[in-house]
Image (cartoon, rainbow, N blue to C red; front, side):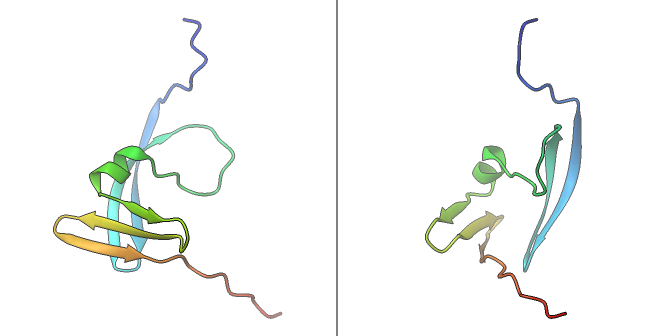
Amino acid sequence: NGDNGIHVRKQALISLDMGPYNDEIWCDVIPMSACHILLGRPWQFDRKVSHDGRTNEYSVTKGKATYNIKPYHLVKLRS
């Protein structure tokens, strides 16, 4: 049909667990070069997500609870 967009043919139910916050999200499966799950606007809207760009912290609301998610810090491993 001349459309150059990506056609989604599969979805997967992903369990997300970040500290005290856990959730299940239906994600579209598309071919791409990435090693992270990309959470888009539907999840952000449904969970009233806000992001602090300076601290890289997220605030997520699920039901009546609000969770503050802080970034994990990489630990240098010794040989």
